[in-house]
Image (cartoon, rainbow, N blue to C red; front, top):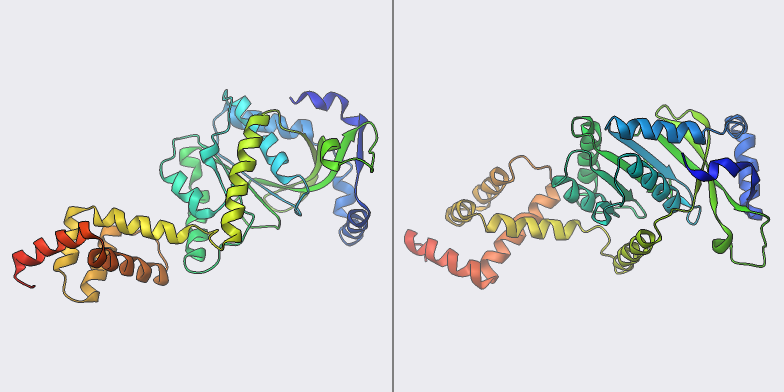
Length: 317
């Protein structure tokens, strides 16, 4: 069990003035918070995690809370402890994603028992966004067979097929808080409310600052790159996925010849759908994919020449 549990009673819990007002209102409108905050389930929670890890079972957990409430460190610490129980030392940074599209791409090449983090900081909007969520939902519902483990975090509550989820609640430090100093340099612990899959409050858990500082540094760098993409309105990554899929299909010799020989958009689209082998795409996505393929055949020299050879054999220049 985490060493800090031995001195958890010495933690000085604090909230900023407006956070304190928000907490009072939450307790007033939902008295379950008052009950949950009397039950420290930290030891039981990590014992539960250890059993799941030792028996190689699948596990899905979500964490939500406002920006700057300690979500990333909370989930990172839980995952690090979970991997330690599994006999692993590091979180695979490639398994830490910031869009559903990226997560689904990683899951495609998964190994049994994989552990994944999805940091849902933004909404995926536009074509394909609902399809992505449906695919992820299907993956979550079938993870038991492959013993996959997912940890989600987001600024607001998103529904997942979780076993448990937590709401970040309060920050803590050793000694006393000094409000003339940086909060980040004093923040050592986070208290979170623990819910089960029925959304019942069970109690609260305490997490501390993750031990692997190198991972945190790399994770923050990857997250900052993603945020820069969002600022340039390229956060989803779905458009790139469609383009990559187009080029992958064009490298398939059988598909390429059938596509070029097909007369009319209906037949071309049918050949494309057959080549996708039932992969879920929205109507807009499939139209976009068809357009990418046709553009590449007309504009990319490599594919233009291949198409000319095929058309030459048909005598349809």
